[in-house]
Length: 612
Image 1: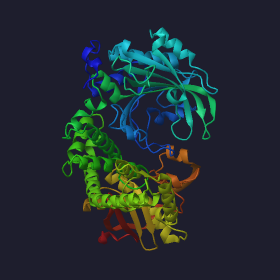
Image 2 (image 1 turned 90 degrees about the horizontal axis):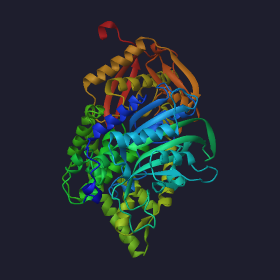
Image 3 (image 1 turned 135 degrees about the vertical axis):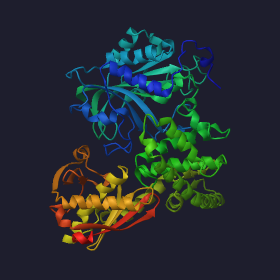
Image 4 (image 1 turned 60 degrees about the vertical axis):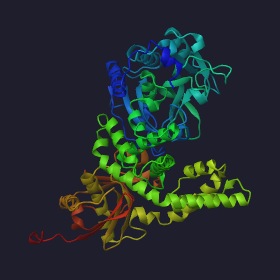
């Protein structure tokens, strides 16, 4: 049922579509002198975070003194993915995993030309919401930072909001928990915030004495967060003033659409309703969870993040399997996710055309994961029920960490899925014990890591060095021919052959294999120079060097460049010139798991002209 506000509100007359809102936002700030910058990848360059969680992440260095190539005013609509609110997805009308963050940014204040700070940022936000989106200003409430620790109260924001017509009773003060943001990652720029909230119902709740923004009753929805980057927080949590201040704002497109389209939840907007309407059930919570998770999965998989048991791949597997399990709960048919994927692509294909070009790959990955989970779900559930029965007999209410880890290891049950299933039976799980078991598993596995990813092990002769160098050429050639989503997943080298594992959802064609071979041999024939240099990990990542195993890298790394064709972080060793390699020949291409392919190749003397 719609909140009473929507039945009586005569001010909010314009019903804009989400693409129109996105376009109007970017056009508004472009006219205000901002450079429109495309969304960066969901895979950030900052190795301390798994995903892009905010619009400012791609601009992080420009708050720390580095010159911005875009100027001091930029705006964007950034793809973001967060798992911090995953338990709230489907329960509240506003929490999501994947979302788009509309943001405007200012760097290098006050020295930088055209840079700005509090006053302009707050005026821009107010004008966009009231004049462009035509929201009723009487429904807007704001929050500011009140003093805490050694950080003073934001008196300036208070004065500016009052000058814009906000009465004092609609300006609330909150502490760091609600009105201080950042940093992204382990350290970086941060600062106090002021937030703009929209009053959905106009009615105070009975739960709290003072029903204000941030109240749990869902009367208000936070629309826009304006961050005043004035501090730098180091890895230990210590704050120091920034020499150059900056503005970082973020507004969820989905929430803005909810308000502008007069909906009671983000799931009723045009970004979700075509997906939700494809799920035939009366269980609104389950429908919302499935819709959110499939949307996030499509975007993650389109960037080459495939289901696995580690890092980003673990998150994809977690949300996909959670969606599949809720589909089972609703008795949805087999492969029910496929038409939902198609709806996601249809909604976003004009804004993110890469989704359309990757649609078949995404469908293949999701179908494979669904089939894989089908095989283990029933057996895993049977095992879990047995464990719960045993606990009941022993009058225990906690499932041991070893049992939880065995479910993870043997049946692919993410920890969170086991927690949900246990909760339904009024059981808890031993998370600490699970993490301990997981750590032991990692330590056992780490013994083979050097050989798996370094390829050479501890010994190397000239032939293995040549083959190792060839893997760099092969890696780049695969990315050139099959697409940038290809990632190295491991290698093994002997003096006779190389074995190279990479992420890819389908079998390579004979034509693709031939193109890869030809491209590698072309670079060998060009006798490219192999150069190495040392730099910090961050500098290496910024330079464009390929790196897919960030957790293994020290602060100082070696980068090997082969002409202008290949550039990777690697410990070496390598040949000096590519002509030393001879002739590259792929002898086998095969599957070694879901979305994982393997190439075996050899090096031989260049063939004679009549042998080609």
